[in-house]
Length: 577
Ligand code: TTP
Ligand code: MG
Image 1 (tube, rainbow, N blue to C red):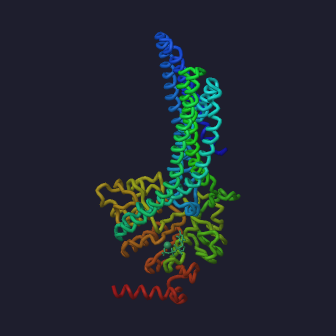
Image 2 (tube, rainbow, N blue to C red):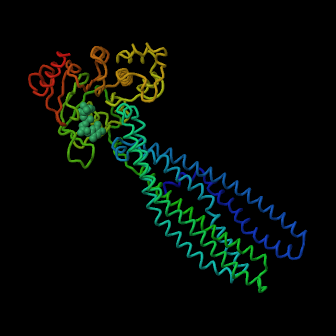
Image 3 (cartoon, helix red, strand yellow):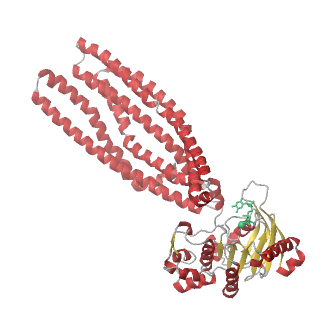
Protein backbone atom coordinates (compact mmCIF):
# COMPACT_ATOMS: atom_id res chain seq x y z
CA UNK A 1 0.00 0.00 0.00
CA UNK A 2 2.84 2.34 0.88
CA UNK A 3 4.05 2.38 -2.70
CA UNK A 4 0.78 3.96 -3.84
CA UNK A 5 1.19 7.02 -1.62
CA UNK A 6 3.40 8.55 -4.26
CA UNK A 7 0.49 8.57 -6.72
CA UNK A 8 -1.66 10.49 -4.24
CA UNK A 9 0.95 13.14 -3.52
CA UNK A 10 0.72 15.24 -6.69
CA UNK A 11 -3.07 15.42 -6.30
CA UNK A 12 -3.29 15.60 -2.51
CA UNK A 13 -5.30 18.83 -2.61
CA UNK A 14 -7.99 17.19 -4.70
CA UNK A 15 -7.88 14.14 -2.46
CA UNK A 16 -8.66 16.38 0.54
CA UNK A 17 -10.96 18.97 -1.02
CA UNK A 18 -13.34 16.48 -2.58
CA UNK A 19 -14.56 14.75 0.61
CA UNK A 20 -14.69 18.08 2.46
CA UNK A 21 -16.84 19.72 -0.20
CA UNK A 22 -19.13 16.72 -0.19
CA UNK A 23 -19.86 17.42 3.47
CA UNK A 24 -22.04 20.37 2.38
CA UNK A 25 -24.41 17.79 0.92
CA UNK A 26 -24.58 16.05 4.29
CA UNK A 27 -25.36 19.31 6.01
CA UNK A 28 -28.20 19.99 3.60
CA UNK A 29 -29.59 16.50 3.81
CA UNK A 30 -29.69 16.62 7.58
CA UNK A 31 -31.16 20.13 7.76
CA UNK A 32 -33.79 20.00 5.02
CA UNK A 33 -36.11 17.49 6.74
CA UNK A 34 -35.90 19.57 9.96
CA UNK A 35 -36.90 22.73 8.03
CA UNK A 36 -39.71 20.76 6.44
CA UNK A 37 -40.95 19.64 9.86
CA UNK A 38 -40.97 23.27 11.02
CA UNK A 39 -42.96 24.36 7.98
CA UNK A 40 -45.61 21.77 8.80
CA UNK A 41 -45.55 22.12 12.58
CA UNK A 42 -45.44 25.91 12.71
CA UNK A 43 -46.37 27.30 9.29
CA UNK A 44 -49.09 24.91 8.18
CA UNK A 45 -50.69 24.28 11.54
CA UNK A 46 -50.89 28.01 12.34
CA UNK A 47 -51.56 29.14 8.75
CA UNK A 48 -48.51 31.42 8.99
CA UNK A 49 -47.84 32.17 5.29
CA UNK A 50 -44.84 34.55 5.76
CA UNK A 51 -43.14 31.89 7.90
CA UNK A 52 -43.64 29.30 5.19
CA UNK A 53 -42.23 31.70 2.57
CA UNK A 54 -39.24 32.50 4.75
CA UNK A 55 -38.44 28.88 5.41
CA UNK A 56 -38.91 28.17 1.73
CA UNK A 57 -36.17 30.64 0.88
CA UNK A 58 -33.87 29.19 3.53
CA UNK A 59 -34.44 25.73 2.04
CA UNK A 60 -33.72 27.01 -1.46
CA UNK A 61 -30.42 28.56 -0.36
CA UNK A 62 -29.48 25.35 1.43
CA UNK A 63 -30.20 23.39 -1.75
CA UNK A 64 -28.04 25.76 -3.81
CA UNK A 65 -25.12 25.42 -1.39
CA UNK A 66 -25.51 21.65 -1.57
CA UNK A 67 -25.41 21.77 -5.35
CA UNK A 68 -22.27 23.91 -5.41
CA UNK A 69 -20.58 21.55 -2.96
CA UNK A 70 -21.64 18.53 -5.01
CA UNK A 71 -20.29 19.97 -8.25
CA UNK A 72 -17.01 20.98 -6.63
CA UNK A 73 -16.66 17.58 -5.03
CA UNK A 74 -17.26 15.79 -8.30
CA UNK A 75 -14.68 17.97 -10.04
CA UNK A 76 -11.93 17.27 -7.52
CA UNK A 77 -12.83 13.57 -7.41
CA UNK A 78 -12.31 13.35 -11.17
CA UNK A 79 -8.99 15.20 -10.96
CA UNK A 80 -7.72 12.94 -8.21
CA UNK A 81 -8.87 9.66 -9.75
CA UNK A 82 -7.79 10.36 -13.32
CA UNK A 83 -4.46 11.78 -12.22
CA UNK A 84 -3.74 8.84 -9.94
CA UNK A 85 -4.65 6.27 -12.59
CA UNK A 86 -2.70 8.04 -15.33
CA UNK A 87 0.52 8.15 -13.32
CA UNK A 88 0.10 4.58 -12.15
CA UNK A 89 -0.52 3.37 -15.70
CA UNK A 90 2.60 5.03 -16.98
CA UNK A 91 4.69 3.42 -14.21
CA UNK A 92 3.25 -0.03 -14.85
CA UNK A 93 3.95 0.40 -18.56
CA UNK A 94 7.53 1.40 -17.84
CA UNK A 95 7.94 -1.63 -15.63
CA UNK A 96 6.60 -3.92 -18.35
CA UNK A 97 9.05 -2.36 -20.80
CA UNK A 98 11.89 -3.39 -18.53
CA UNK A 99 10.67 -7.00 -18.43
CA UNK A 100 12.87 -9.72 -19.83
CA UNK A 101 11.44 -12.19 -22.34
CA UNK A 102 11.18 -14.68 -19.51
CA UNK A 103 9.11 -12.22 -17.39
CA UNK A 104 6.72 -11.57 -20.25
CA UNK A 105 6.36 -15.29 -20.96
CA UNK A 106 5.38 -15.74 -17.30
CA UNK A 107 2.52 -13.20 -17.42
CA UNK A 108 1.32 -13.59 -21.02
CA UNK A 109 0.79 -10.44 -23.05
CA UNK A 110 -3.00 -10.60 -22.76
CA UNK A 111 -2.84 -10.49 -18.99
CA UNK A 112 -0.46 -7.56 -19.06
CA UNK A 113 -2.87 -5.69 -21.33
CA UNK A 114 -5.76 -6.35 -18.93
CA UNK A 115 -3.72 -5.17 -16.00
CA UNK A 116 -2.73 -1.98 -17.79
CA UNK A 117 -6.28 -1.16 -18.87
CA UNK A 118 -9.16 -2.84 -17.11
CA UNK A 119 -7.52 -3.26 -13.71
CA UNK A 120 -6.29 0.31 -13.54
CA UNK A 121 -9.69 1.61 -14.65
CA UNK A 122 -11.24 -0.41 -11.84
CA UNK A 123 -9.03 1.37 -9.34
CA UNK A 124 -9.77 4.72 -10.92
CA UNK A 125 -13.52 4.16 -10.58
CA UNK A 126 -13.22 3.31 -6.94
CA UNK A 127 -11.22 6.43 -6.20
CA UNK A 128 -13.79 8.47 -8.10
CA UNK A 129 -16.74 7.08 -6.16
CA UNK A 130 -14.89 6.47 -2.93
CA UNK A 131 -13.61 10.02 -2.50
CA UNK A 132 -17.06 11.47 -3.00
CA UNK A 133 -18.59 9.15 -0.46
CA UNK A 134 -15.68 8.84 1.96
CA UNK A 135 -17.13 11.40 4.39
CA UNK A 136 -20.55 11.84 2.84
CA UNK A 137 -21.99 8.40 3.47
CA UNK A 138 -20.78 8.05 7.06
CA UNK A 139 -21.66 11.72 7.64
CA UNK A 140 -25.16 11.22 6.37
CA UNK A 141 -25.52 8.09 8.47
CA UNK A 142 -24.35 9.77 11.66
CA UNK A 143 -26.24 13.01 11.00
CA UNK A 144 -29.48 11.20 10.35
CA UNK A 145 -29.08 8.94 13.38
CA UNK A 146 -28.36 11.91 15.65
CA UNK A 147 -31.28 13.93 14.28
CA UNK A 148 -33.57 10.94 14.68
CA UNK A 149 -32.55 10.50 18.31
CA UNK A 150 -32.95 14.21 19.05
CA UNK A 151 -36.37 14.25 17.48
CA UNK A 152 -37.78 11.12 19.07
CA UNK A 153 -35.47 8.87 21.09
CA UNK A 154 -38.00 6.11 21.72
CA UNK A 155 -38.86 5.80 18.04
CA UNK A 156 -35.21 5.94 17.03
CA UNK A 157 -34.56 2.76 18.98
CA UNK A 158 -35.83 0.88 15.93
CA UNK A 159 -32.53 1.83 14.25
CA UNK A 160 -30.58 -0.11 16.84
CA UNK A 161 -32.09 -3.29 15.46
CA UNK A 162 -32.06 -2.41 11.77
CA UNK A 163 -28.48 -1.14 11.43
CA UNK A 164 -26.62 -4.18 12.84
CA UNK A 165 -28.89 -6.58 10.95
CA UNK A 166 -28.22 -4.80 7.67
CA UNK A 167 -24.50 -4.50 8.29
CA UNK A 168 -24.36 -8.24 8.84
CA UNK A 169 -26.22 -8.96 5.60
CA UNK A 170 -23.99 -6.62 3.59
CA UNK A 171 -20.85 -8.10 5.11
CA UNK A 172 -21.91 -11.54 4.04
CA UNK A 173 -22.61 -10.42 0.49
CA UNK A 174 -19.16 -8.89 0.20
CA UNK A 175 -17.45 -11.93 1.63
CA UNK A 176 -19.05 -14.16 -0.97
CA UNK A 177 -18.60 -11.71 -3.85
CA UNK A 178 -14.91 -10.94 -3.39
CA UNK A 179 -13.39 -14.25 -4.55
CA UNK A 180 -15.85 -14.32 -7.43
CA UNK A 181 -14.57 -10.99 -8.66
CA UNK A 182 -11.04 -12.31 -8.56
CA UNK A 183 -12.06 -15.21 -10.76
CA UNK A 184 -13.85 -12.84 -13.11
CA UNK A 185 -10.72 -10.75 -13.56
CA UNK A 186 -8.77 -13.88 -14.55
CA UNK A 187 -11.41 -14.67 -17.16
CA UNK A 188 -11.01 -11.18 -18.59
CA UNK A 189 -7.30 -12.00 -18.91
CA UNK A 190 -8.06 -15.13 -20.83
CA UNK A 191 -10.47 -13.34 -23.13
CA UNK A 192 -7.96 -10.57 -23.82
CA UNK A 193 -5.25 -13.10 -24.68
CA UNK A 194 -7.66 -14.77 -27.07
CA UNK A 195 -8.62 -11.48 -28.74
CA UNK A 196 -5.04 -10.41 -29.01
CA UNK A 197 -3.94 -13.65 -30.62
CA UNK A 198 -6.83 -13.67 -33.06
CA UNK A 199 -6.30 -10.05 -34.12
CA UNK A 200 -2.54 -10.28 -34.49
CA UNK A 201 -2.84 -13.38 -36.61
CA UNK A 202 -5.98 -12.53 -38.50
CA UNK A 203 -4.26 -13.11 -41.85
CA UNK A 204 -3.16 -16.62 -40.97
CA UNK A 205 -6.56 -17.43 -39.53
CA UNK A 206 -8.24 -16.32 -42.74
CA UNK A 207 -5.78 -18.11 -44.99
CA UNK A 208 -6.37 -21.36 -43.14
CA UNK A 209 -10.09 -20.63 -43.10
CA UNK A 210 -10.00 -21.12 -39.35
CA UNK A 211 -12.36 -18.22 -38.74
CA UNK A 212 -15.18 -20.31 -37.37
CA UNK A 213 -12.78 -22.31 -35.23
CA UNK A 214 -11.45 -19.06 -33.73
CA UNK A 215 -15.00 -17.83 -33.26
CA UNK A 216 -15.79 -20.95 -31.28
CA UNK A 217 -12.73 -20.50 -29.13
CA UNK A 218 -13.71 -16.90 -28.58
CA UNK A 219 -17.28 -17.83 -27.80
CA UNK A 220 -16.04 -20.31 -25.21
CA UNK A 221 -13.87 -17.68 -23.48
CA UNK A 222 -16.65 -15.15 -23.71
CA UNK A 223 -19.19 -17.55 -22.24
CA UNK A 224 -16.73 -18.36 -19.48
CA UNK A 225 -16.42 -14.69 -18.62
CA UNK A 226 -20.17 -14.23 -18.80
CA UNK A 227 -20.80 -17.08 -16.39
CA UNK A 228 -18.20 -15.93 -13.90
CA UNK A 229 -19.57 -12.38 -14.17
CA UNK A 230 -23.07 -13.63 -13.54
CA UNK A 231 -21.86 -15.67 -10.60
CA UNK A 232 -20.32 -12.57 -9.06
CA UNK A 233 -23.19 -10.22 -9.78
CA UNK A 234 -25.82 -12.72 -8.70
CA UNK A 235 -24.55 -12.09 -5.17
CA UNK A 236 -24.25 -8.37 -5.66
CA UNK A 237 -27.76 -7.89 -6.91
CA UNK A 238 -29.02 -9.51 -3.69
CA UNK A 239 -27.93 -6.30 -2.04
CA UNK A 240 -30.73 -4.26 -3.50
CA UNK A 241 -33.74 -6.41 -2.52
CA UNK A 242 -32.33 -6.87 1.00
CA UNK A 243 -32.03 -3.11 1.31
CA UNK A 244 -35.46 -2.41 -0.08
CA UNK A 245 -37.04 -4.93 2.23
CA UNK A 246 -35.26 -3.44 5.23
CA UNK A 247 -36.27 0.04 4.17
CA UNK A 248 -39.93 -0.79 3.71
CA UNK A 249 -40.24 -2.81 6.90
CA UNK A 250 -38.57 -0.08 8.91
CA UNK A 251 -40.70 2.67 7.39
CA UNK A 252 -43.78 0.64 8.15
CA UNK A 253 -42.69 0.15 11.76
CA UNK A 254 -41.96 3.87 12.12
CA UNK A 255 -45.27 4.99 10.64
CA UNK A 256 -47.12 2.43 12.75
CA UNK A 257 -45.59 3.42 16.09
CA UNK A 258 -45.11 7.08 15.16
CA UNK A 259 -48.70 7.33 13.94
CA UNK A 260 -49.96 6.17 17.30
CA UNK A 261 -47.81 8.78 19.03
CA UNK A 262 -49.19 11.51 16.75
CA UNK A 263 -52.75 10.36 17.51
CA UNK A 264 -51.93 10.36 21.23
CA UNK A 265 -50.61 13.90 20.79
CA UNK A 266 -47.09 13.06 22.02
CA UNK A 267 -45.48 13.71 18.61
CA UNK A 268 -46.06 16.67 16.25
CA UNK A 269 -47.27 15.58 12.78
CA UNK A 270 -44.40 17.36 11.02
CA UNK A 271 -41.87 15.36 13.01
CA UNK A 272 -43.27 12.12 11.65
CA UNK A 273 -42.53 13.08 8.01
CA UNK A 274 -39.08 14.29 8.95
CA UNK A 275 -38.45 11.15 10.95
CA UNK A 276 -39.34 8.86 8.06
CA UNK A 277 -36.97 10.85 5.86
CA UNK A 278 -34.15 10.32 8.38
CA UNK A 279 -34.83 6.63 8.49
CA UNK A 280 -34.66 6.45 4.72
CA UNK A 281 -31.40 8.41 4.82
CA UNK A 282 -29.87 6.05 7.34
CA UNK A 283 -30.69 3.06 5.19
CA UNK A 284 -29.64 4.80 1.99
CA UNK A 285 -26.25 5.67 3.41
CA UNK A 286 -25.82 2.08 4.52
CA UNK A 287 -26.67 0.96 1.01
CA UNK A 288 -24.21 3.40 -0.51
CA UNK A 289 -21.51 2.24 1.88
CA UNK A 290 -22.20 -1.32 0.85
CA UNK A 291 -21.86 -0.44 -2.82
CA UNK A 292 -18.59 1.36 -2.24
CA UNK A 293 -17.26 -1.55 -0.23
CA UNK A 294 -18.24 -3.93 -3.01
CA UNK A 295 -16.59 -1.79 -5.66
CA UNK A 296 -13.54 -1.53 -3.44
CA UNK A 297 -13.33 -5.26 -3.04
CA UNK A 298 -13.18 -5.48 -6.82
CA UNK A 299 -10.57 -2.79 -6.95
CA UNK A 300 -8.51 -4.52 -4.29
CA UNK A 301 -8.41 -7.60 -6.48
CA UNK A 302 -7.28 -5.37 -9.35
CA UNK A 303 -4.75 -3.54 -7.25
CA UNK A 304 -3.27 -6.84 -6.19
CA UNK A 305 -2.79 -7.73 -9.85
CA UNK A 306 -1.13 -4.39 -10.54
CA UNK A 307 1.14 -4.82 -7.53
CA UNK A 308 2.14 -8.21 -8.90
CA UNK A 309 3.47 -6.53 -12.03
CA UNK A 310 5.23 -3.77 -10.11
CA UNK A 311 6.76 -6.30 -7.71
CA UNK A 312 8.05 -8.62 -10.40
CA UNK A 313 11.76 -8.96 -10.22
CA UNK A 314 13.22 -8.39 -13.64
CA UNK A 315 15.45 -11.42 -13.99
CA UNK A 316 17.71 -9.98 -16.61
CA UNK A 317 19.27 -6.69 -15.63
CA UNK A 318 22.59 -5.00 -15.72
CA UNK A 319 24.81 -6.91 -13.34
CA UNK A 320 26.59 -4.77 -10.82
CA UNK A 321 30.04 -5.70 -11.87
CA UNK A 322 33.30 -3.86 -11.97
CA UNK A 323 33.45 -3.91 -15.74
CA UNK A 324 30.32 -1.83 -16.44
CA UNK A 325 32.33 0.45 -18.69
CA UNK A 326 33.69 -2.45 -20.74
CA UNK A 327 33.28 -1.88 -24.46
CA UNK A 328 33.17 -4.30 -27.34
CA UNK A 329 35.96 -3.40 -29.72
CA UNK A 330 36.62 -6.51 -31.81
CA UNK A 331 33.71 -8.90 -31.75
CA UNK A 332 35.09 -12.33 -30.89
CA UNK A 333 32.38 -14.63 -29.61
CA UNK A 334 32.96 -17.57 -27.35
CA UNK A 335 30.57 -20.04 -25.75
CA UNK A 336 31.96 -21.97 -22.78
CA UNK A 337 29.99 -25.03 -21.65
CA UNK A 338 26.67 -23.28 -22.11
CA UNK A 339 23.43 -24.95 -21.05
CA UNK A 340 20.04 -23.34 -21.38
CA UNK A 341 16.33 -24.00 -20.97
CA UNK A 342 13.33 -21.67 -21.23
CA UNK A 343 11.77 -22.67 -17.95
CA UNK A 344 13.92 -22.57 -14.86
CA UNK A 345 12.57 -25.81 -13.45
CA UNK A 346 12.72 -27.68 -16.72
CA UNK A 347 15.08 -30.59 -16.61
CA UNK A 348 15.09 -30.96 -20.38
CA UNK A 349 17.72 -28.62 -21.76
CA UNK A 350 17.21 -26.77 -25.03
CA UNK A 351 20.96 -26.33 -25.25
CA UNK A 352 23.49 -28.52 -23.49
CA UNK A 353 27.20 -28.10 -23.13
CA UNK A 354 27.83 -25.78 -26.05
CA UNK A 355 31.41 -24.62 -26.54
CA UNK A 356 32.96 -22.89 -29.55
CA UNK A 357 34.92 -19.81 -30.45
CA UNK A 358 34.63 -17.37 -33.34
CA UNK A 359 37.33 -14.82 -34.10
CA UNK A 360 36.47 -11.22 -34.90
CA UNK A 361 35.43 -10.63 -38.50
CA UNK A 362 34.77 -14.28 -39.24
CA UNK A 363 31.62 -15.59 -40.83
CA UNK A 364 29.97 -18.56 -39.17
CA UNK A 365 27.04 -20.51 -40.53
CA UNK A 366 24.74 -22.50 -38.28
CA UNK A 367 22.77 -25.35 -39.73
CA UNK A 368 20.52 -27.95 -38.19
CA UNK A 369 17.04 -29.39 -38.30
CA UNK A 370 14.10 -27.34 -37.11
CA UNK A 371 13.77 -27.14 -33.34
CA UNK A 372 17.38 -28.13 -32.67
CA UNK A 373 18.06 -24.86 -30.84
CA UNK A 374 19.66 -22.50 -33.37
CA UNK A 375 17.52 -19.52 -32.45
CA UNK A 376 17.90 -20.27 -28.77
CA UNK A 377 21.68 -20.32 -29.16
CA UNK A 378 22.04 -16.93 -30.82
CA UNK A 379 19.52 -15.27 -28.46
CA UNK A 380 22.06 -15.73 -25.70
CA UNK A 381 24.58 -13.42 -27.40
CA UNK A 382 22.65 -10.12 -26.96
CA UNK A 383 21.23 -11.52 -23.68
CA UNK A 384 17.63 -11.84 -24.74
CA UNK A 385 17.86 -14.72 -22.28
CA UNK A 386 20.56 -15.68 -19.79
CA UNK A 387 22.34 -19.01 -19.74
CA UNK A 388 21.53 -21.55 -17.03
CA UNK A 389 25.17 -22.52 -16.69
CA UNK A 390 28.36 -21.75 -18.52
CA UNK A 391 28.97 -18.39 -20.12
CA UNK A 392 28.92 -16.41 -23.33
CA UNK A 393 31.96 -14.20 -23.83
CA UNK A 394 32.52 -11.33 -26.22
CA UNK A 395 36.09 -10.10 -26.53
CA UNK A 396 36.87 -12.39 -23.60
CA UNK A 397 34.39 -10.67 -21.27
CA UNK A 398 31.19 -12.32 -20.09
CA UNK A 399 28.15 -10.71 -21.77
CA UNK A 400 26.67 -10.18 -18.30
CA UNK A 401 29.49 -7.76 -17.53
CA UNK A 402 28.64 -5.33 -20.31
CA UNK A 403 25.89 -2.79 -19.83
CA UNK A 404 22.80 -4.16 -21.56
CA UNK A 405 22.52 -1.06 -23.67
CA UNK A 406 26.05 -1.25 -24.98
CA UNK A 407 25.76 -4.99 -25.56
CA UNK A 408 22.58 -4.75 -27.57
CA UNK A 409 23.84 -1.73 -29.47
CA UNK A 410 26.90 -3.71 -30.52
CA UNK A 411 25.05 -6.84 -31.55
CA UNK A 412 22.81 -6.46 -34.59
CA UNK A 413 20.24 -9.20 -34.71
CA UNK A 414 17.67 -9.91 -37.35
CA UNK A 415 15.12 -12.08 -35.62
CA UNK A 416 13.54 -15.06 -37.27
CA UNK A 417 10.14 -13.52 -36.59
CA UNK A 418 11.04 -10.03 -37.74
CA UNK A 419 8.71 -7.10 -37.44
CA UNK A 420 8.46 -3.70 -39.05
CA UNK A 421 6.47 -0.90 -37.46
CA UNK A 422 3.90 1.41 -38.95
CA UNK A 423 5.64 4.48 -40.29
CA UNK A 424 7.85 5.26 -43.28
CA UNK A 425 10.67 2.99 -44.47
CA UNK A 426 13.17 5.63 -43.37
CA UNK A 427 11.68 5.72 -39.88
CA UNK A 428 11.96 1.97 -39.65
CA UNK A 429 15.55 1.87 -40.83
CA UNK A 430 16.47 4.61 -38.35
CA UNK A 431 15.64 2.25 -35.52
CA UNK A 432 19.18 1.10 -36.16
CA UNK A 433 20.59 4.61 -35.86
CA UNK A 434 18.36 7.57 -35.13
CA UNK A 435 20.82 10.10 -36.47
CA UNK A 436 21.70 8.30 -39.71
CA UNK A 437 21.71 10.62 -42.71
CA UNK A 438 20.26 9.73 -46.09
CA UNK A 439 23.59 8.48 -47.52
CA UNK A 440 24.31 6.15 -44.62
CA UNK A 441 20.79 4.84 -44.85
CA UNK A 442 21.07 4.21 -48.57
CA UNK A 443 24.42 2.48 -48.10
CA UNK A 444 22.89 0.11 -45.55
CA UNK A 445 19.92 -0.49 -47.80
CA UNK A 446 22.09 -1.29 -50.76
CA UNK A 447 24.27 -3.67 -48.70
CA UNK A 448 21.08 -5.51 -47.81
CA UNK A 449 20.01 -5.45 -51.49
CA UNK A 450 17.00 -3.35 -50.54
CA UNK A 451 17.94 -0.11 -52.30
CA UNK A 452 16.61 -1.36 -55.63
CA UNK A 453 13.05 -2.04 -54.63
CA UNK A 454 12.86 0.92 -52.25
CA UNK A 455 13.68 3.36 -55.04
CA UNK A 456 11.16 1.63 -57.29
CA UNK A 457 8.41 2.76 -54.91
CA UNK A 458 7.00 6.14 -55.98
CA UNK A 459 7.70 7.62 -52.57
CA UNK A 460 11.03 5.85 -52.06
CA UNK A 461 12.25 5.97 -48.48
CA UNK A 462 9.14 7.88 -47.43
CA UNK A 463 6.88 5.00 -48.44
CA UNK A 464 4.54 4.30 -45.58
CA UNK A 465 4.56 0.80 -44.12
CA UNK A 466 1.39 -0.37 -42.49
CA UNK A 467 1.46 -2.11 -39.14
CA UNK A 468 3.70 -5.18 -39.26
CA UNK A 469 4.98 -4.13 -42.68
CA UNK A 470 2.31 -6.07 -44.49
CA UNK A 471 2.45 -4.00 -47.66
CA UNK A 472 5.89 -5.29 -48.59
CA UNK A 473 6.66 -8.84 -49.67
CA UNK A 474 8.24 -11.38 -47.33
CA UNK A 475 11.64 -11.12 -49.01
CA UNK A 476 11.49 -7.32 -49.13
CA UNK A 477 10.62 -7.25 -45.45
CA UNK A 478 13.58 -9.47 -44.62
CA UNK A 479 15.93 -7.19 -46.54
CA UNK A 480 14.56 -4.10 -44.76
CA UNK A 481 15.18 -5.81 -41.45
CA UNK A 482 18.76 -6.61 -42.46
CA UNK A 483 19.30 -2.99 -43.50
CA UNK A 484 17.90 -1.85 -40.17
CA UNK A 485 20.39 -4.07 -38.33
CA UNK A 486 23.27 -2.94 -40.56
CA UNK A 487 22.60 0.72 -39.72
CA UNK A 488 23.66 -0.04 -36.16
CA UNK A 489 27.11 -0.75 -37.54
CA UNK A 490 27.29 -3.69 -35.14
CA UNK A 491 30.46 -5.51 -34.17
CA UNK A 492 28.51 -8.73 -34.35
CA UNK A 493 25.72 -9.36 -36.83
CA UNK A 494 23.32 -12.24 -36.40
CA UNK A 495 20.95 -13.27 -39.14
CA UNK A 496 18.43 -15.85 -37.97
CA UNK A 497 17.07 -17.43 -41.11
CA UNK A 498 16.83 -13.89 -42.47
CA UNK A 499 17.14 -14.62 -46.15
CA UNK A 500 14.77 -17.58 -46.29
CA UNK A 501 12.30 -15.61 -48.40
CA UNK A 502 14.94 -14.04 -50.64
CA UNK A 503 15.78 -15.73 -53.95
CA UNK A 504 19.20 -17.39 -54.18
CA UNK A 505 20.64 -14.86 -56.64
CA UNK A 506 19.78 -11.88 -54.42
CA UNK A 507 21.02 -13.80 -51.40
CA UNK A 508 24.36 -14.30 -53.12
CA UNK A 509 24.50 -10.54 -53.74
CA UNK A 510 23.91 -9.86 -50.07
CA UNK A 511 26.70 -12.28 -49.15
CA UNK A 512 29.01 -10.57 -51.60
CA UNK A 513 28.31 -7.10 -50.22
CA UNK A 514 28.83 -8.39 -46.69
CA UNK A 515 32.30 -9.69 -47.48
CA UNK A 516 33.07 -6.23 -48.85
CA UNK A 517 31.50 -3.78 -46.42
CA UNK A 518 31.36 -5.90 -43.28
CA UNK A 519 34.89 -7.25 -43.29
CA UNK A 520 35.43 -6.34 -39.62
CA UNK A 521 32.06 -7.51 -38.39
CA UNK A 522 31.62 -10.97 -36.96
CA UNK A 523 28.74 -12.54 -38.86
CA UNK A 524 26.63 -15.41 -37.59
CA UNK A 525 24.22 -16.72 -40.14
CA UNK A 526 21.54 -19.31 -39.44
CA UNK A 527 20.21 -20.89 -42.59
CA UNK A 528 18.26 -23.81 -43.92
CA UNK A 529 20.07 -23.91 -47.27
CA UNK A 530 23.65 -25.09 -47.25
CA UNK A 531 24.40 -22.79 -50.15
CA UNK A 532 23.72 -19.86 -47.80
CA UNK A 533 26.60 -20.80 -45.52
CA UNK A 534 28.90 -22.85 -47.75
CA UNK A 535 31.47 -20.09 -48.09
CA UNK A 536 31.53 -19.30 -44.36
CA UNK A 537 34.81 -19.64 -42.43
CA UNK A 538 33.18 -22.15 -40.12
CA UNK A 539 29.96 -24.07 -40.23
CA UNK A 540 28.36 -25.29 -37.02
CA UNK A 541 26.01 -28.24 -37.31
CA UNK A 542 23.53 -28.59 -34.48
CA UNK A 543 21.53 -31.59 -33.40
CA UNK A 544 19.07 -31.63 -30.52
CA UNK A 545 20.67 -28.82 -28.60
CA UNK A 546 24.24 -29.96 -29.11
CA UNK A 547 26.99 -29.15 -31.56
CA UNK A 548 27.72 -32.18 -33.66
CA UNK A 549 30.48 -30.62 -35.73
CA UNK A 550 32.26 -27.41 -36.63
CA UNK A 551 34.59 -26.64 -39.52
CA UNK A 552 34.80 -25.33 -43.07
CA UNK A 553 32.61 -26.74 -45.80
CA UNK A 554 35.32 -29.13 -47.00
CA UNK A 555 36.22 -30.24 -43.50
CA UNK A 556 32.59 -30.83 -42.64
CA UNK A 557 31.97 -32.82 -45.81
CA UNK A 558 34.86 -35.04 -44.86
CA UNK A 559 34.11 -35.35 -41.13
CA UNK A 560 30.46 -34.87 -40.36
CA UNK A 561 27.98 -37.49 -41.50
CA UNK A 562 24.95 -35.31 -40.70
CA UNK A 563 26.35 -32.44 -42.74
CA UNK A 564 27.03 -34.75 -45.66
CA UNK A 565 23.47 -36.05 -45.52
CA UNK A 566 21.96 -32.56 -45.53
CA UNK A 567 24.28 -31.50 -48.33
CA UNK A 568 23.54 -34.47 -50.52
CA UNK A 569 19.79 -34.26 -50.04
CA UNK A 570 19.79 -30.55 -50.90
CA UNK A 571 22.00 -31.06 -53.94
CA UNK A 572 19.70 -33.80 -55.19
CA UNK A 573 16.71 -31.51 -54.89
CA UNK A 574 18.58 -28.81 -56.73
CA UNK A 575 19.42 -31.26 -59.50
CA UNK A 576 15.79 -32.28 -59.84
CA UNK A 577 14.70 -28.65 -59.90
P1 TTP B 1 14.62 -23.08 -31.45
O1 TTP B 1 15.87 -22.61 -30.81
O2 TTP B 1 13.65 -22.04 -31.88
O3 TTP B 1 14.99 -24.03 -32.66
P2 TTP B 1 15.53 -23.63 -34.10
O4 TTP B 1 15.74 -22.18 -34.21
O5 TTP B 1 16.68 -24.51 -34.35
O6 TTP B 1 14.34 -24.08 -35.04
P3 TTP B 1 13.90 -23.44 -36.45
O7 TTP B 1 14.85 -23.94 -37.47
O8 TTP B 1 12.54 -24.00 -36.66
O9 TTP B 1 13.88 -21.97 -36.28
O10 TTP B 1 13.86 -24.04 -30.47
C1 TTP B 1 14.49 -25.01 -29.67
C2 TTP B 1 13.50 -25.51 -28.64
O11 TTP B 1 13.18 -24.47 -27.75
C3 TTP B 1 12.21 -26.00 -29.24
O12 TTP B 1 11.85 -27.19 -28.57
C4 TTP B 1 11.20 -24.91 -28.91
C5 TTP B 1 11.78 -24.29 -27.69
N1 TTP B 1 11.50 -22.82 -27.60
C6 TTP B 1 10.75 -22.32 -26.54
O13 TTP B 1 10.29 -23.06 -25.68
N2 TTP B 1 10.54 -20.96 -26.44
C7 TTP B 1 11.05 -20.08 -27.39
O14 TTP B 1 10.85 -18.85 -27.27
C8 TTP B 1 11.83 -20.63 -28.49
C9 TTP B 1 12.41 -19.73 -29.56
C10 TTP B 1 12.02 -22.00 -28.54
MG1 MG C 1 14.89 -20.70 -35.25
